[in-house]
Length: 337
Ligand code: PMV
Image 1 (cartoon, protein in one colour):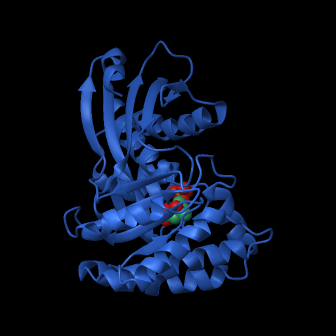
Image 2 (tube, protein in one colour; image 1 turned 90 degrees about the vertical axis):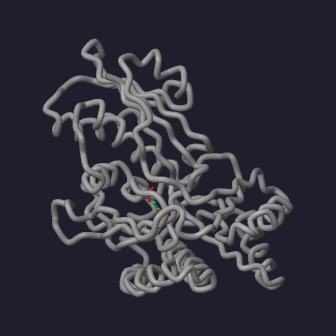
């Protein structure tokens, strides 16, 4: 049986940066995100007794060894649960640049968790899927749900309570995230490596951890109130605080390029003109601008006018991970994925 799932990436408004357990991928703190419709991954999975090893195809091409090994490790979790040893064929496609700080791991592992667990005959409820997706990538736990989502850090050592929960649905607030893509190259430092080095060496890490609960409480309330200024100012502050901690690691972890800074100034410029637009930046050089739907076109044009910006992608709130097909053979799945 082939299962095909779709899932969208999410962008954190209050960031996850630091792990309390690297093996189980348990976060040190909670985080809050918005799932985004336009940044989508579709993944088809088929367990096939004829295969000797797992096979992974990304965007129509065989994946490299490192990516395939990561997927095998993840599928092993599902095989253990389903009491099977069968290898799988996985076809995955993204609608946006892979591994460039556009949160492709969040859509990738949430889609894979749903497609692979279903193909293995498991019917996992959303909290269990969220826990499973977390093992692939911390942010993927949040993409199981649509709209505004909170990741709970949990307290248990086995990680069963480190799962995401919905805060408000996709249609709660007509906002946009406008992404200014500053380069088409892959990022130099993975989020896992950046977090590890920040946690181990940054003198600002304790402050980052201590102030997260306050940021989460204020953000949750401001989102429910649909208060653009409170959400935006706190989102920007939280992102700058995360990057300040990373920059103070030894050696410093710098994710920005020149265009990143130019885009930050462009956002400050829009605010001076009275447009409520606020930025956030993840483990990559792109700038993601939070604004009201009515201002998205103006924001998009402003970002696109900054020299060196490659592309602008406007994203609306999206749905959580969904199963889109179950078929008998991968040949049929290949036609749509
Ligand atoms: O899910 P990961 O391991 O790629 O980490 C995501 C880290 C950030 O994108 C920088 C922040 C976040 O909360 O998504």
